[in-house]
Structures are given as C-alpha cells and as structure tokens.
Amino acid sequence: MLSTTFAALLPDRLPWYIAGPALGLLVVGFFMVANQPLGATGAYVETYKTVTRKPEAVTWRMFYFLGIPIGGLIGVLLKEDGFVRRSGYDALRNELSLGTTALIVLVGAVVMGYGARMAGGCTSGHGICGTAQRSPASWMATCTFMGAAVVTTLVIRIVSGGAI
Amino acid sequence: MKSSTAHKVLGLLFGAGFGFVLAAANLHEYDTIHKMLRLEEIDVFLLMGGAIGTSLPLLWWLERRRANTVIGGPLLLSRSKPRREHVVGGALFGVGWAVSGTCPAPALVMLVSGAGLAAVTITGLFVGLNLRDAHVRRNAGVATAADGEHRDVLASPR
Image (cartoon, rainbow over all chains, first blue to last red; front, side):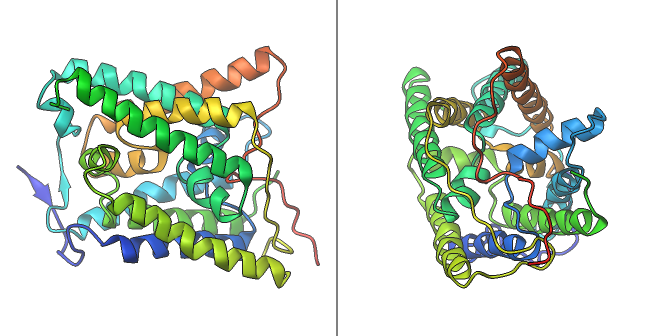
C-alpha cells in the first residue's frame, strides 16, 4: 500500500502513561492561558456557525477545530506507516461492503452528534475537561456514555456472531 | 463574543497539540477504540485516567490558589448538576460512538491519516449536531449545561 512518511520519529503507538498526562497538561495549559476548556463538540458547533456566518459564532473555536487535523497530520507523518490512503474501519470492512459500512458509520455518527449536543459534550468536553473540573454533570455523562458504548459493542458482537 | 487574534492563534496551537497526541497514541484508529470497547485492551481507559489524573488535581490546586490566567482573567471552573439531558444524550452518544468507532476529535485525525470513510463520520456528526439544535429551537428549549465546552468569560483585569 502506498504510504507517505517523513521520518519514523514516533513509535507505532505512544504509551498511555505518556499520552494521558500529555493530554491532561494540554487541558490545564489552555485553562491557564485562555480560561477555556477544550471540548471538541463545541468546536464543531462553532465551526458550523462561523462557516454559515451566524452572528453569535465563536470564531476562535474554528481555529481550534482546524488545529486538530493539522497536529494530527504531523503526528501521522512522523510514524513509520505514515499517511496511508484507505477506506478505514477495517473490522467492519472485513465483513461488510463499502456501501453498507458507510451507511452504518453515517447513522452511528448522526446519533453520536445528536447525543453529544444533547448531553453538552463528548469524550473530550465531558470525558476529560468536565471531569477534570469536578463537574457532577460531566461525570454523569461520562459514566453513561462509557457504559452505553461498552454495552452497544457487546450487542454488535453478539449480533455479528463475534465477527465485529 | 468577538474572538481576539490571541484566541485564534492559541486555539490553533492547542488544537494542533491535541491532534498530535491523538495521532501519536493511535486514538484515530477504529481498531484502537473498537478493542477498548470490546474490553480487550485497557490502554485507552488508562490514557483517559492519566489525563484526568493529571488535570483534575492540578486544576483543583490552581483553583484554590485563585490563579490568574494569562488572557482570560481569574481561573474559573464550572460545575453543573446532572440533568436528564446529560444521561439521555450521553447514552445516545455512547451508542453512536460504539457504532462509528471514533469520537468527534479523533475523527478529524482519522481523515487526515488517509481513511476516507472518516469524511462520512464527520458529515454525520455535523448533521446530528444540527438536528439537535433544530429540535431545541423548535421547542424553545435551552441548551444543556456543558462544562467542558466554550463559555463566555470576559477578560477582566482581576
């Protein structure tokens, strides 16, 4: 497969005991600089508002939104595998056609987006930034989505006969 | 709220830092999240624990010290009471997360790593967020308390 890499400076997977505290320090750092949490759901919402020129849009959130794939691409290009053009979702693609996979992923993403907006945050907003502020609402949302995701995955596993 | 240039530059930088760590830890890969949710690997749980375990005590300490932020005035943490929306929305989010195998921020990294289907995920997310906003507008409701999301903090001189 065609892959692009700059240099294999990063391991295949940075261990959790480095990546976890690094994320935590980014959260604390942004609070100490700008007094703001780093939720991704709000970044999607404000990006949409900025692009559609809503007067109440919080423009800097779009810059945050754009920063994520820029930093992500740098990280990807510093790995041995680097950038690899592919469809993604290997475990699903091994069992299903591209069209079926796309449809399932689309439905899942719509439900995820609706839920994130309803709950007021996602894995980054509630799961890290909210829990770190000791917010009861965030702890409640985080425990709920963790539990729901594990149960859903179990159901998928049973329905697919263990294949997915 | 009008965004200052400083906010935009800082947003871009911290977004890039966040995206870099997500890519470095392979969180943009469907398989990483899928294995975590199948409870085959505990790394991502430990990673989240490590992130909270670092930021929670530090923020607590900074809050007690009444720390001042660089451009945002005195440090302000927000804590809301759980409401029905946090539970129902959280459950829906969890179901969608399990099906699509990635959450909002890693989906953006997934796309730039070359996985084309991530474009479908990102599109679906925008659709879902807007469906919820439209629903709230129709019912003249209020948005759910979101302690991990942007809020209007005026840069006050102490």
